[in-house]
Length: 232
Image 1 (cartoon, rainbow, N blue to C red):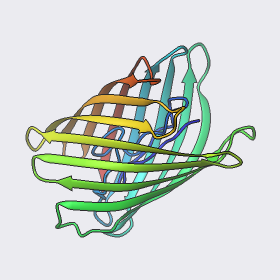
Image 2: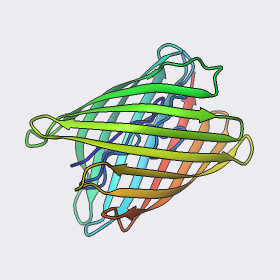
Image 3: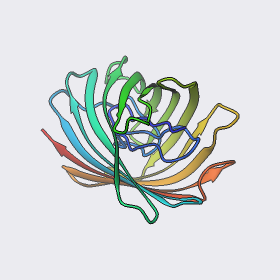
Image 4: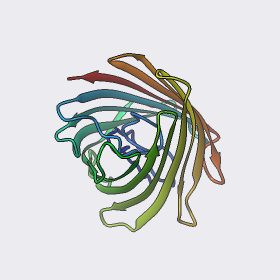
């Protein structure tokens, strides 16, 4: 069972781990964890997410996404999922609209929000998926601390609960490092811990890069990237 989630004010990539919960979608501030740091109204982002996962069968995941600040408290998103397994051609898996909400004002260091997504499966034998994330965070000029409660429900299947937590330390205005953990509350689930670098290359371009490994039933290792273009 896969479980994906977009960081609030973020994007997403297809779930990569089986039976692990999906990762944060947008990757603006983190790669696995969602935040309630939404874009300002009228600001948009285009994002290309690419992940490589080494397990029994290696996989490469691609997720193009567009994110737009509809209001100061709501962001809308559209992303698609592509997957390439070792020795096979790239497959289009699904498309997913999403909405992200912030419940607290921008001036507060504490933030709370909600992310909601519906994933339409491309193949008839795959299930559509509803995904929700409760998002909580505390942000200062130096630290960004975030935690998620994740919920996934496949059509015609059982539900799954999970979590994600992350801590990011800013080395300055342009560079940050951090640690992220994504996992499941279910007994059959798996988890991943990742070390990340988050860099602002220019006013309109950023890149996030992470190297992770499984905890319990997670992947042998995973390399995750997000390339982010800002437009207004």
